[in-house]
Image (cartoon, rainbow, N blue to C red; front, side):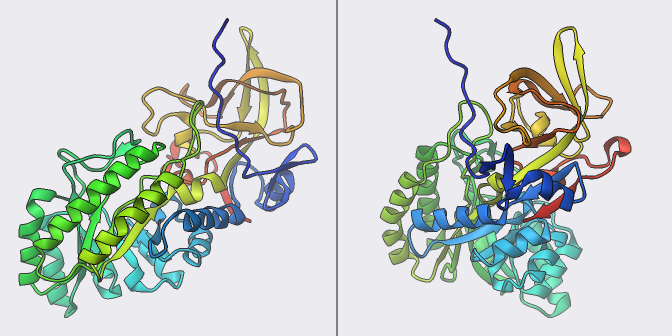
Length: 411
């Protein structure tokens, strides 16, 4: 007996009616037309709202939620989430402009990244946001900038911990890293910050991202709190801000399941009393990007040709890797796997076939789905790729081969 093939996790955040996916409660064909046609990204604000609500329900009271804008910096998305979460995290001056325009209080915005330009540090100091220092060199530069501007920089230290988030999609800590200050060098850096008279708020400890194993996240959070308590003991001032990162993943590939938040929330409930006793002034922050917006987005393209090559069916679309690098498998995948995909205007169809979905680019890398069993599609039909709300358009080589850009719309 053959073993059943692994299936994608159910994508129930977008309901179906009248043979079509619904986005914002409306047929996708209608929404696409309003967005200006294909290819386009569509973001459902109600899905984002539900994601935040589910997190609030699962996590202990008092945990502050921040949105990491690098996942999706579209202003409409940022403005919507800014009203739901407790702060924003940026990774460039461009993102900082969007964050400030959202009305978020500067004290609730933090800035991370290993290569901040002097102009970006100047903008951050002038705005009064928290700058996560990634190196001793950055400390030197921001001190000089503060003196030149006559402003006291608001800073925290991003820590490169000795541990890592096991089974994470991207490891941001442990071993040599471009991110953060090695934990063994942090005590000396805290003394330097105090000597220079900077406004030190706390620590940012982020060990990895895109994790679907709650036990791994629980272990990393336990280690993060232990490390924070040790480092805070060496600080010259009370720790007022502790960003423990995120790492919460979403299911992209066959065999993956939605993350179970219950064990994470239960463990935080157990850990927080000790943390609050030792660090009574600390605001504990969980920073999430992909988890909040990834499931709320669809990438939609249209079939412009249907061809058969040596028995294999190819659907050629007007979208591709230049808009959605991650779905093509060229954004860090070791072994290419398919994102969940639908023929968005044939959701009730029972006639299926194995097809590969490709874009218009002159490269075999322009592959959006490989030999997936999908409803039979014809020219003009809509292909929708789920889990596309994070690291989509802005994480893709949009100028490649000079094809038209994709649109974006939030509903």
